[in-house]
Length: 496
Ligand code: BGC
View 1 (cartoon, protein in one colour):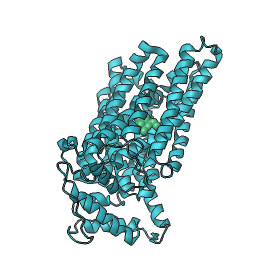
View 2 (cartoon, protein in one colour):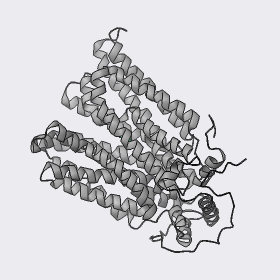
View 3 (cartoon, protein in one colour):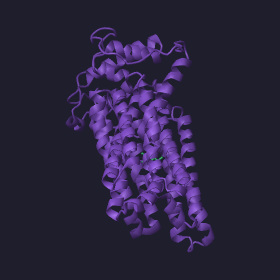
View 4 (cartoon, rainbow, N blue to C red):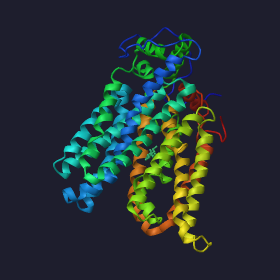
């Protein structure tokens, strides 16, 4: 029997074409190459272009989180920073992102997904300009907070915007472009840091983000609004116009009907409604995935790679930096595996395979460093073995938890609750990111290489959580997924 949760109305299908009045405009110019026949080559190109533009927010996310490590080498002497001020300059972004994510939930509902992405772009532009010109450390910290807000906004609005426009069959790979952009941004930051280091040009390192920020704003302006948000606000005509750019006429009718039905069955969720029994299981999955993405240790490597490589025996600065750039490149390339496979094999198999590889790598890394001499590993080999397993760990993260967490957070929630629930899950991701990065130096001093076993244990917990609670979302419409929560609120192990 269908379980209807408090706050949900009973299921009732209405024929398409009646009901809501048409208001608003999609804010779009119609591309000429749309082909509505089977295959839709024009539409596929158009939606890929839309996803590519929105994903520029991911590029800035990756660049701005990655660039600071190299820039700090020169900011510290320039402003004579003490330890506390250094911590503030670095962590202001993560802190800002936490609040930006929450603000992103409210603004994605109030002004729409498209405008929230544009506001994020404007904040990126302002933040990078101010940080490049900062006359003192207070202004620098303020600029890093603004960049953090922008990252928070984009990490909510960009994947959600792409997911709400994408056809179900390509949604996985289109939203994964966001992660591809994050990893490209991280790699670009490593390269820029390295290229500008001889000139101590930290202002350029920070200021270069201005360019993708401007491209994001200019690129988003002509793009359409999410049809799901338009229908939610009553702008049915505008929603139909947008859908007709991306779907065949029959698909437009089915989509409109399904979205309206989903909107009718759920009431607009206030923040506190997210804890109601009807939404709680989905929220648990969103927050769980978001937190597990961080507590399995990814950013200890992304943020501290040069130090880790030096400790692992690559003692020359240049070798450690080259290894860091190698890690950045592996991270980008392995994300392509997810883009290729996520709509074919599904989300859960990739998540579980990736986690298995991450656990093996972490255990091997910890064992080689902790017990290497006892089990007869030649000390000269400990460094290369460590680098090899760090590489494997990155490959496995990059085709699983990296892209699929952002993807699933943007697809598991009902239309009425999506923006706020995505915001809470994303804020949990940033909170976990903050705590893991903060605790890493302390835990490393306390536990040494055994810290790898702690992150591996988190990987085991993540796998159990995914098997037990996370539904497979491959190929299903967002409305099918919403219905699935109403009829089967708790995921059944192995359920498709
Ligand atoms: C995570 C970031 C991480 C990045 C590494 C993203 O999905 O959210 O915290 O730095 O992947 O590629």
